Image (cartoon, rainbow, N blue to C red; front, side, top):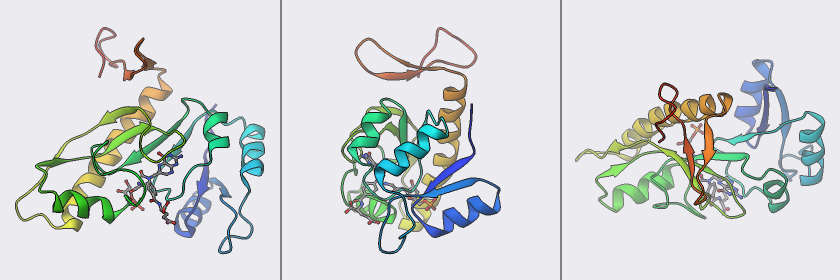
Length: 185
Ligand SMILES: Nc1nc2c(c(=O)[nH]1)N[C@@H](CN(C=O)c1ccc(C(=O)N[C@@H](CCC(=O)O)C(=O)O)cc1)CN2
Ligand SMILES: NCC(=O)N[C@@H]1O[C@H](COP(=O)([O-])[O-])[C@@H](O)[C@H]1O
């Protein structure tokens, strides 16, 4: 069963979701969000709503280990670089693209990965490549990468809905092709 619901860390995302009729719970509890849920309250809410998959998008806090352990192989995140490059603590939003441009890398692109206890080291599930341009600005690169993010996350969610995400014997997650069951990416 798919629930339209949203765990919002930012006010803009929460308001947009509410206006779209999407159930919103705010996490974590903080000074700026005193009505936010604690980890245990969030876990109870997710269980009550029978949530079985969690997808992060622009979520800028560390998901607590209790939530990671309660949802094994069931929390995904999208990161705006080709992990493991340019990931980890301090790498989010434009900071990621700034590091990529400074490195003179020839390619960048989004990564969809499983979430584990630490930032950005969970198993990679899908990536898309974006070529760097000689006159790239942070904003131009961010826009091109974001465009690919919106494509690759939709592809991953579609594969999730189709039950086409499988784990290879060596522990690598792969996606079975929608058209040819003998092909994987
Ligand atoms: N347990 C996990 N939690 C989260 C993960 C993860 O892989 N495991 N991914 C991040 C998303 N992310 C990159 O994709 C990311 C977000 C934020 C940071 C970061 O350094 N944050 C700052 C705080 C920023 C703020 O307060 O707004 C920090 O921790 O100092 C790194 C990577 C989502 N959660
Ligand atoms: N590490 C997490 C991270 O950097 N997330 C990134 O923040 C950007 C802004 O998205 P938004 O316009 O939806 O807020 C997106 O590129 C997203 O990948």
